[in-house]
Image 1 (cartoon, one colour):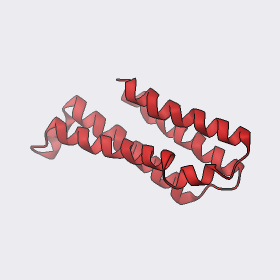
Image 2 (cartoon, helix red, strand yellow):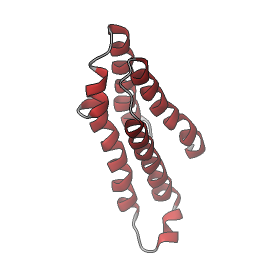
Image 3 (spheres, one colour):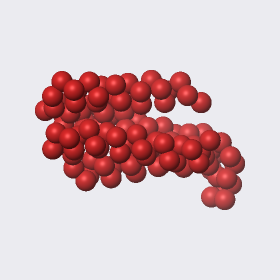
Image 4 (tube, one colour):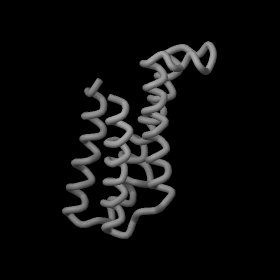
Length: 114
């Protein structure tokens, strides 16, 4: 499951970046921050679920959950209130539709998917 997510989740981040690039509003910092947050979210989830966290000493599963949620929280912030949202507002109706659709997929889809 995590191998798949390490491919598909960053691809969704790339899709946000490409939507913003279509209107000339994409920045490398936007791409870097979203990619880093998605990787933090996935790696922390893997460590918490697999027990691999034991390699790091006495860190509990809940700590890895908090770290993973911080990554997802940053992504949600960027999409709903941060620089990605601000950049999307300068786009056409098509860009707005694509951005809004992807934002809901990430927000709701990732919330209900185990």
